[in-house]
Image (cartoon, rainbow, N blue to C red; front, top):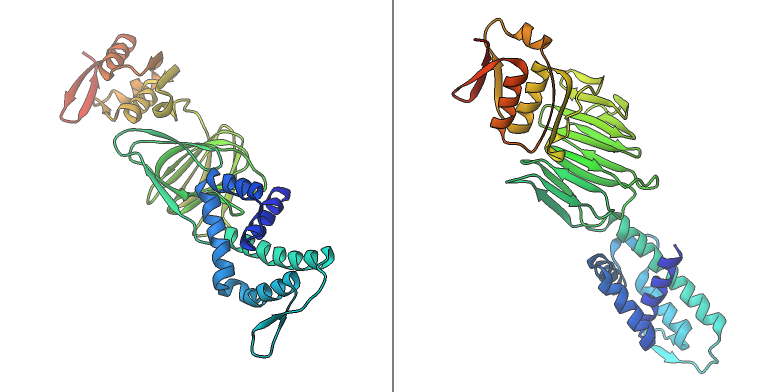
Amino acid sequence: MEGNYHIETLILRQLQQEASPAEQLELQQWLDASPENRQEYQALADIWANSPPALQGAYDTAAAWKKMQSHLLGLSPDEDGTATVIPMRSNRANWLVAASGLLLVLSTGWWLYREYGPKTTLVMQAQETDRKMTLPDGSIVYLRKGATVKYAEAFVRKQRITELSGEAYFEVVHDPNRPFAVKTAHALIEDQGTSFLVKGWDTLTEVVVAAGQVKFTDRDQDSRNITLNAGEKGFLDAHGLVRGKTTDSNFISWKTGVLDFHNTPLDQALQDVHDFYGINPTFAPGLLEEAREIKVTARFENQPIKDVLEEIKLITGLEWKQEKDTLVFYRK
């Protein structure tokens, strides 16, 4: 708040054309620091120039400006609306009264602009490959190929909101005064100090919490919500919200580049391989039950799919063959 007050004072003096060269330099440095600062300054200048309706209910800014000028310069409005100079001795008390009134209106305009003013919405897409990006608050988002995230150019409101389509992993800079939220087509995921994965599709939202805690809410029925802790996952579909334990350590393998199996049932291991490489594995008739009993212990780090399949072949003794876009595992 103290920093804002100081900047407001500089802006006040600049609008009054009373800023010293040093103050003008300091204000210019603030303006040059970010596009958001320039945007806010211009909006505040417009408030004074145009007296927008948002402030008219509480303040007549044009009248307040004239009154302030009267206090500062010793002007007395005539009946025709003009003003004449009244010789008077300027004193600090008069200046402070006028400046305080102006700062009150300016602060109100600043707050209204930051809370309700127009915000530039940015759209980031991971079209050809996975992408890593940093949000305005320092939070990091890893977008999986095909995902899209929308967010405000500057998080200046009481809640930091992003909109997601597709799959993304969030590492959130926690701020209890400005909760972080992810919207999908039907769900709202609110950070309570955490890192988490979100899969947001038209009919299904899945959340996996890696650290911390999130609140998972059905946007179509906001009284229906659950709190997920680290190691838990949740699903939302047409049937409602479901909670479960995270049993798959490879849920963000697309981000880490690592597939790590520790005594993992073969059918589950191949599901992870499918998710990572995009292949479609299946088993020959009668082999599925046996596959659930076969365990895989191996680690793959950004290896070609053929190397992975050959390793699985050596571990399990199963052969595989490609039939169109499907890999069929069988035993000779």
